[in-house]
Image (cartoon, rainbow, N blue to C red; front, top):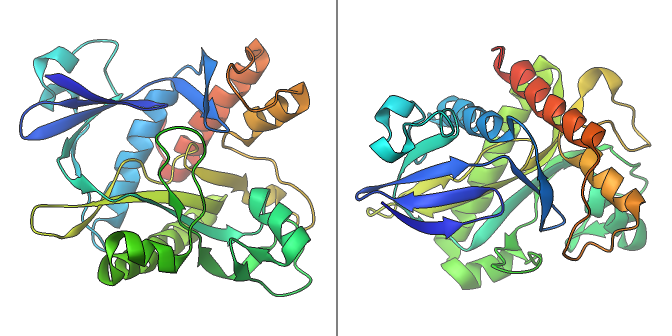
Amino acid sequence: MKQIGHGKVRNIYDVGNQLVLVTSDRVSAFDVVLPNMVPHKGAVLNRLSAFWFDFTKEIIPNHMISINNADMPEEFQTKESKGCCMLVKKLKMLPVECIVRGYITGSGWESYQKTGSVCGIQLPEGLRESEKLPTPIYTPTTKATEGHDEHISFEETIELIGEELATQLRDKSIEIYSMCAEYARAKGIIIADTKFEFGVDKDGTLVLADEVLTPDSSRFWPVDEYVVGKSQRSYDKQYLRDWLKNSGWNKTPPAPLLPDDVVSATSSKYIEAFETLTGSMF
């Protein structure tokens, strides 16, 4: 066993022909890891990703092998690791984060107010905050090893990985988002936007990887509270982000310590999102 990656939330271990992804209770905002842990967050993210990998497997293969602790190497069969580990296939990961936006909010709303566009994509006039877009838009970014990811155009993704793969990334990202957003809405959650990551296997097949449609990688809103024209209450990290914005923090390390009530509320929101989407008790 060899640790080969230490991300903001996940640690990656090479265990021979496969990898083990360990999803921690660490939490990041504005690309900075915060000093607090959020209880149960790692297990929620791991189990929710597993749910979506299974849900989307008919339209795209994924890297998941198992989240059952009994299937993990012995080193991970511990009380601390239970529920937080995913055994996955090895892939060649692609250097693009695939962002799909179904609603205009966050940085997209800020950009639209100034320019009428989001990441260079011109949008219809007169859209209001949090409004559903006529069709989902694809706004990829780079994967920054340090600092912030940078928005890139579709043409720039072609330069990075070639036209065939770039087109597959765009089309599959929108297809996965559209299918899952429809399901989630019927369960009571609007998926306003999300990010996907992909790799290719040894045969060159595109494979969905990393995490899928979690509160870390997506913006979740309750359907029954949705009102166009204002920001929405959120199941995801937005509550935590809002506290950080109001704290006066300048979004550079070190981040401030979060109050206990913000940590507790964030944990509850993660669990509520999991239970609402999967229909299972956490």
